[in-house]
Image (cartoon, rainbow, N blue to C red; front, side, top):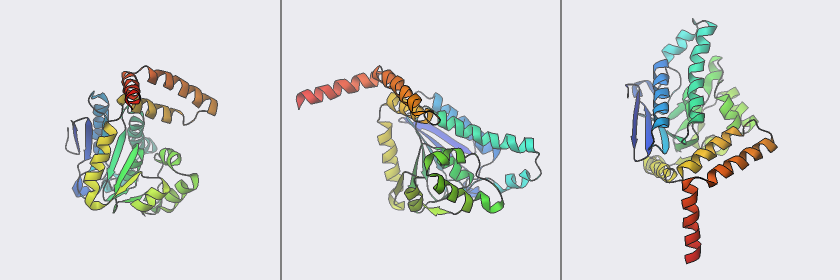
Length: 256
């Protein structure tokens, strides 16, 4: 699709690869724009069941490009807001994507790169991977990702991560609930591929409805969340996947 981002869909898996290994896959407006294009393309692809975001080379993503950081000091408030909104729009696209998005993290995922991983629905990490939101160390704020991080971990864990800017190991990130699976470096490719392939076998309609309902409940009252669950439950019963699944279950029960 482009120079900064590689995109392909094969056997139900759409793979989006950050392709600036010489810059540790640092984020700049061009790369973010191409990421948005790839995410949009995968949402339109009828055969896509799971999206995987990874980084080419040793690192997942080291954060913002240094040239871009230098430029922010000279930008107007309007320019800086437009730049920040570009990333926020990407996060929203990922949140509203009909398929699960999985980050496959090797090496470092720092600052905006850690934000990108956090914006995915699931994060798989190699044992030696590192995570962090070090923006505070240069007087900056891990601002947009906080909306997601706050919903992913406890309030105090989120505050410690953004207030200290500490870089943490995959093991510690797993303990905090930032990431979901840790695999040994030697087995990462095999294990992460197996995980994604298993996820791709799940009912497409059920996973889509589950993702939509889960995120829809963010700001709902308990009663409203239950009502949203009632509506999704009714819709799910009418899908072809559910009908077939019930038939298989009943046949299996009859045989046993």
